[in-house]
Figure (cartoon, rainbow, N blue to C red):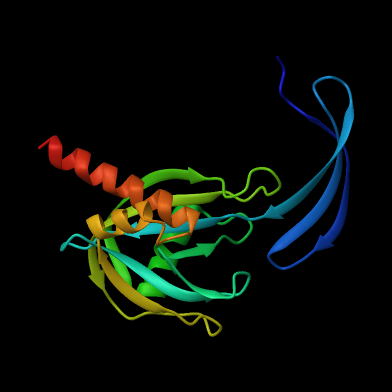
Amino acid sequence: MELFEKTLEQEYKYEGRIINLRVDKAELPNGQTCTREVVEHNGGVTVAALTNEGELLFVRQFRYPYGEVVLELPAGKLEKGEDPFRAGIRELREETGAVAEKYVDLGKFYPSPGYCGEIIHLYGATGITFKEQALDEDEFLNVEKIPLSTAVEMVLNNEIPDGKTQAAVLKMAMRTWYEEESK
């Protein structure tokens, strides 16, 4: 069965600094038409930075849509056309002051594929050294180090609700454990 939906019309309802909202008319595989609401977003990046002591670097920051402080891996949004890998290096340094010797691509994460086109690029980082943070003037956060095994337990115990962080923590843990087993 063909699953592709063909876009027939697009109407922008809102164009903002971070997101655009459009309403599309699309043709379904059976020939019927439907309405699709789409949030356009340039995407983002998340970095699971593992210290030589086996700790992941986390940040705690207030997240306005939820009205709470959220524990997350260092992350940030992409500028239009920005290289995700370069953005990951930048965000890790800005938010934590960390610089990594080695990076590994942990894949892509689609946060809400039903209505949002955002793609978050996940990276792992090792060989961490520290310099000074370079926070944006509207950015307020606390940096924490959490042992990788504890972070995995926190994900499994629903203590870390952020999806990109859950995915990157578990992927980094599996990569680390596979590398140790193959030695």
